[in-house]
Length: 310
Image (cartoon, rainbow, N blue to C red; front, side, top):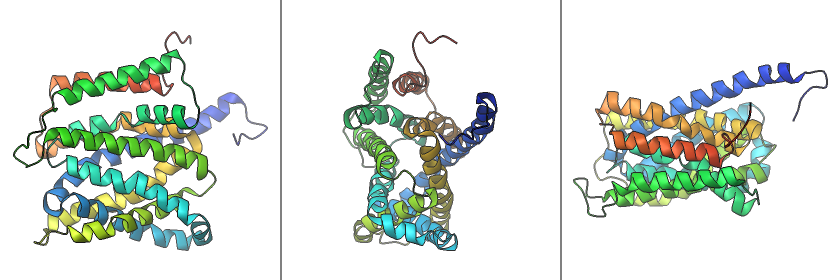
């Protein structure tokens, strides 16, 4: 902790809580919109080209900022690790969610995305030996139960009107969440101290390189329309470029569990955007499962504890 010697606990909390919360809420609103924008673009681009163009735009946006701020030496020094975390934290997850959005709603995708902190706690337990207490173990069980209940309704592996089985879409979302969880612990362990802008830019560059060849191979025969391009431009600059600066800053300042807790708020924005713009239906079952998942995740990350006294 970089607390000045003269700061009291109350003044330190007052000074640090407000920026942390504002970053969290802003990031949730931005990433909530990403599901809507990815849905719009994936229909015309396809999953892999959508993910590749998204990270490519983000890389083009962020790299000049790295150069202007004199951070290019940091990027050269750490490029292997930040490129790797980009494939894990952007390339694979973006492709998975783009694939999933062809057959399930943005709201359901965002609810599944809320399991990221739960998987993060599990990864920290298995990899970083961060052994959970009884409350956190209960949270893991509760969270996985919520996912199972939510996925059960979409468990069919028969193709729907989109040609993709909803069951595969759900599994793709969960794979993306596992990648996010591993990347968060990797970032905390190996990339701590690197400027967030360097990590954000390098990660998008790494994801772009990782997706370039498969995206070129699967590029649509018919050029996508203006609406799809505009959606990708916004999702690349706002939801990847600016958002990942916020995200890596949260990891640096607050740690992986608190940074990953942004996914609690993302479904709220994603469901709202999907209902207003796409007219998606939100069922009571989805909301009930979302509550179970969020409660389990809050317990598994230690944000809530059973029997905690105030």
